[in-house]
Image (cartoon, rainbow, N blue to C red; front, side, top):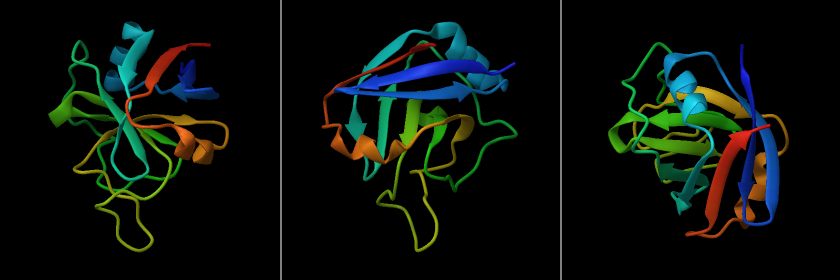
Length: 125
């Protein structure tokens, strides 16, 4: 059963969910998690060093606006809201494959307002 979450960043509050994959369940078990926003194009990511997961069946090199990912090489939670430096026309690409762990259910485009270094908190709804 998915875990409903709230993403709080700067003055923004977005709802979403984590799926039932092993990586998503590990993240859900660690909630609440807090990190400092690092930006890579239109992706916010931050390390969650206490969550460790390998690439799984959801691993993909291409994501969509609103996807939530876990990036094993950086042990990081990723929020995708637009193009990254690795993107090509018509595709949003992370630095390398990520496990898809959930989605934002609202409009993630407002995340463009979140500055580098802002506190990001993910908690159960």
